[in-house]
Image 1 (tube, rainbow, N blue to C red):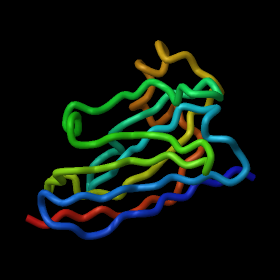
Image 2 (image 1 turned 180 degrees about the vertical axis):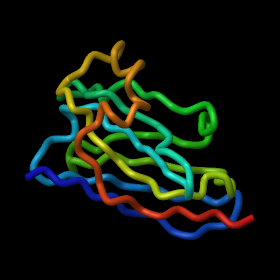
Image 3 (image 1 turned 180 degrees about the horizontal axis):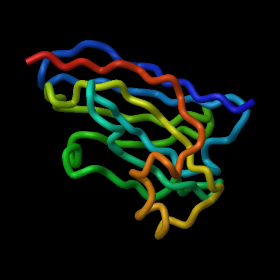
Image 4 (image 1 turned 60 degrees about the vertical axis):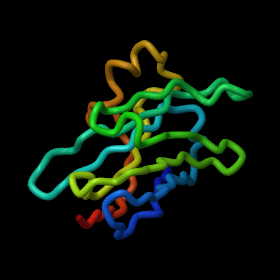
Length: 137
């Protein structure tokens, strides 16, 4: 059974940084687009960042970001560890949410299609349980 798990959340002050990790047991993350979503209280899931599937060698995938996090968040892979990271810098109180990683329901989806689907929760069929990120002002 494929399971995802997030780690790295916590409480930071405004302007601080955190690095979230997404690990998978039972699947190779490099085969799938992986998105980070977040959900604040009373709100729906919001797509934050995505990395498309890699080529199994040196190319890790195309990256996509929500406008609200561009220039502050960076998504990346470490295929040797089967991990996907979300590096978050210059955090703001409005970044407070539970952060989830999720894998695409389609293996090796083309980057052109991922560009259209990466922020749609219904396109992702495996989710972690989430990690809380809280940013104080």
